[in-house]
Length: 209
Image (cartoon, rainbow, N blue to C red):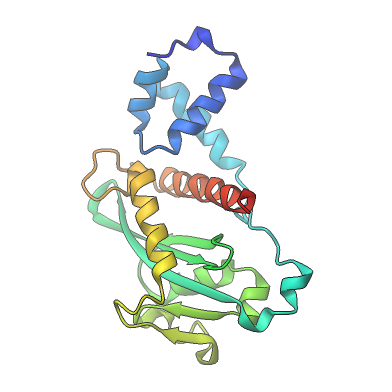
């Protein structure tokens, strides 16, 4: 096990952030780093509170702005729960398949109101110019303008990027694993863990050539 006294405070914080991205439960992190759960919960509360609301999305460049007419977004919903499986919390996601950045997310039910919340969280340029590819879930209708909305049949391959990201989330965020004991007890922590991973993911794809 790593010993707390072997790390400077900064290195210790970096270690925790890395472990939060690797499907490890909070109690697992406590065992690895020999810290108390109370201390760790306080640390992540502070960490999640300072995450950027824009998810670190890189603005569309001037060169790309000229090509606004071909902006694309893929959107999807991912099942999760908080507290117990009866308390379903759907994760709505919107991703730019070209830049691979996650543009927006929302956690709620699977209604049109939740689809609207996802829409409102998108950068304005995407709401105005992008074409949206989604499954046939009815909640999208009436939210995404019909001229910008493309309903994609299952297996068409037109939502591959967002489906691949969904798999990445399930593999990397312990709270989203289907058969898990690491589920969230509080909605705020559930949202914070998802947001933390998405912000990190966006930073990684921006760095890549």
